[in-house]
Image 1: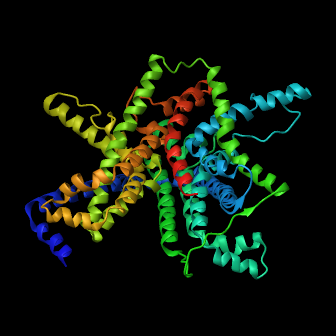
Image 2: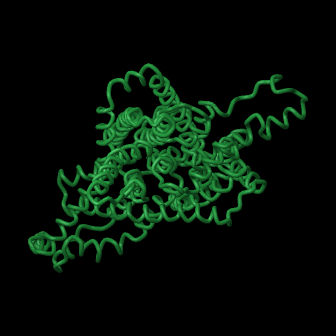
Image 3: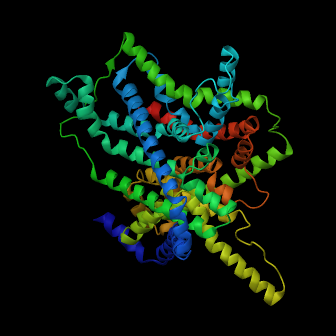
Length: 556
């Protein structure tokens, strides 16, 4: 009773009221910013005219849809197989090196898929090391043998599988760790083999987590641009970029973006329904983890091989190849040009991380301090960005703000004979806004994970001492949540360093980043040069992976 009285009394005071209003304004502003690109894309697509739609349907739309769907299915199957298989092996069995593989299997997460594509093109393409060596040994000509084409739809799917399977691995491993041994052992006593019990008991119980991980990899797949562009695979992502720049057809770009947006939002809804509907509970008196099954002989050798392959293909081999490529290139990481690229990347990533973290704090604390349908709706809208590809966000922001810039410039010219130019679209701030929309869900997840550890009694105590919402946030929440805030900041920083499609479309003139430089060199078939900025991106990407590995070590 005393807690409720203490909590209620100060709420009517001026500090709480003013702070609450400011917090609501900030949270709703963030939600509106996240909703704007989706509304702008929809409006631009619907007002683009039926002629453009008919031309798209008759020409490229079926091919884009079929290729995007095929790529998503391949990646879903591949990440499911690798992620679930690896998670089961390191969680439910014991073999030589299993402790090492628990952590090593997360390492490919540091690679953007397009960087992996550069490395494997250098190895497997016709002039690459493998085919050149094959021709030297056998004396064959170019037409005397068949070799799998790396620049293909299956090749792009393989690159994406190798860097995205850790999402499924981490979620599946967590689900297996949380399972009690009761159901599994019951199946074994009823005559089922270990393999049969896995399929009939353990896998269905982990289905919600696995499905969420697979859907996440599919959303990352449809958002990918660098890999499919390098391998000349025509998807919606490449179609948007081609329509916007090569063809200068804004209507076609907006309509393709709308198609991709609908697909992405359908996946987001499916992921949320899957996560909320499928749940399993332990009904026993105690949660008893399953004892790992020791493996020996050929079974242990097979387990080691199955874990070595994805780590080698997804991390070890590409790192070695990139170093070899970088040493033989003419790119100087310490030259003035590369210092500018690095500075631009760090500037964008730093500003975007701070802005995104501030937006996550505003939305997350608004949901806590003013619970209700309005706050819940603002939170749902803020999370939509993770399902929207960067190219869609770029188009959705450029369309309205380019129109604003043009009208403002025309008015200033006619009124004051002064040109304002590209006031908004020519700056980095619109690009920062795109990053905020795209990666807000990641920062919000990290912030809310820490916020859950702050007991409601702390809020009540702060209000009883006369602190409003902003005072409670500054004096109570932020000091406690420092580790979670740093994690969120780091995640967004690294994601921005790796982001390519939105950066390509929205970057100001003569403002290139390491990701853009790597893409440009690879597009010119200068793969040796592309290795240098790619290595820097991978090195930065290792930071959140190290955090994840530390968490995996704690959860043994």
